[in-house]
Image: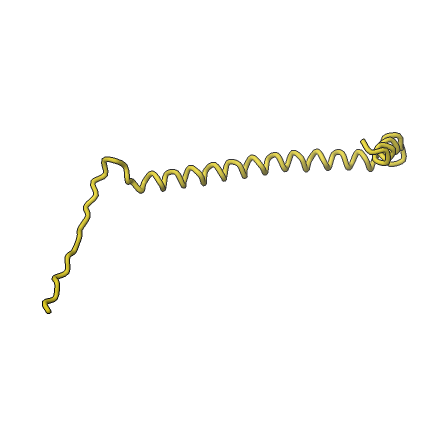
Length: 81
């Protein structure tokens, strides 16, 4: 840990005047972390659902080995000279 950061952390820990403020910061941080966790879970579920939708769309395209394919080749008549 950096010496300046360590001394700042020690001052923050030993300071009693800002106890209420630091408790408010801790509670606010905890609430924000819980909100971020819930938001990331919702984002994860949405991404997984989109991937499933994409897989279903690709699967609906067919193109498997047992899909009959009809190829029509049109031949134009050769013009006479």
